[in-house]
Image (cartoon, rainbow, N blue to C red; front, top):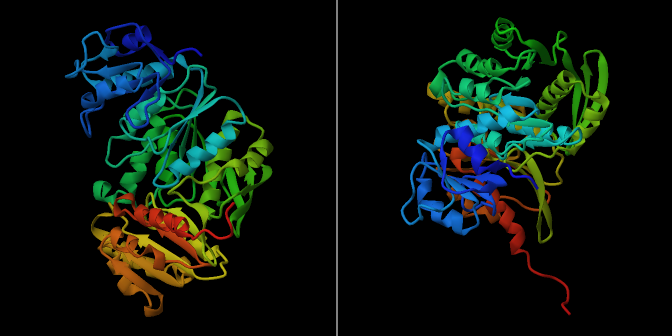
Length: 469
């Protein structure tokens, strides 16, 4: 197997100095997940990674990217010494992008980025060797890391690009240099930093700055701010494919039916009608699939093949993944959507809950939606009027912001309100019973993922039955 990075190539890319001749098969930022043969990157933005270089080398790292020789590490250890680690990682990512002939698809949006990225991965894997970001590696270090990990012989790459504040997307898209750029949606998220949704749309449109000549922008045309995205694409001379439900869309959703744990949909892609089935329920997932079909159209793929391959995608943990939790006397279904939340994604998740047809109850565990700015109280209370929430039999609310929703709920729907997720974790065994379906949804900072973990652990408490030999 050829090396991902040699000492010579990495030094040339970063302007650094290699202390020895080494070869790396991968790139790692965490000693807990480091694989033998990885180049360990000593990041300093959270903790000083230089403190872990000796451990990384002991665990089999091929070398370490550092700004100085760490204490306890020999000067002749395999190192790549640079002036500053984070810019060097970005340079490594830029070099990986420059040497690759891969078609690159970049994805941003207020919601649906990771789901769309994973749909693209599932579809593109059937077309050629595909490289995609792990988890939600979409920020100032995640995008460079994803690119630095990209094998030179990749056919396709999918890069997720996120933001929390103005000015974050432009340098990342210029680094990724996509052939296709997708904006999944623009909704009320990160309003603390942007004030109004128009500002979010303008920042999301910056993903188009990095488009390669002749590149294609795949844009959601159903939004109040769609004109901001489309006008920006026109300014930059990008080709545009519009997706949505409107009559003028290039990729138009004809219908999407939630049938149990599946979504059965039909779309018109530039005059060609395609049917697709997603193995999870959610109208918002069908919209993400439209963006994938738009990318497929831009890349010249067989749309019938791509629409069939969409069935290969499964939502990742924390983003709508569904599983059955066996209990004595039966089982309940868990919908894990605990990674992130804003008003639009909350309503989409509640629609999924409403579409479920359990033998028991529909239960929602809802955590605070963060970074919504001065209107956060009203945005939380407004969920009480959502039709999807009305279908819930019981609603548990987590966090100070969700107190507003709790107080607005009909008394019959009120479960528990708790200030923090751990208060529900302690009584997880009382939250669900056989036949129930339980949605857990909230911003990552609300820590409702701990409730998900506690509910999963209930299956471990089942007594063993039957005889043993």
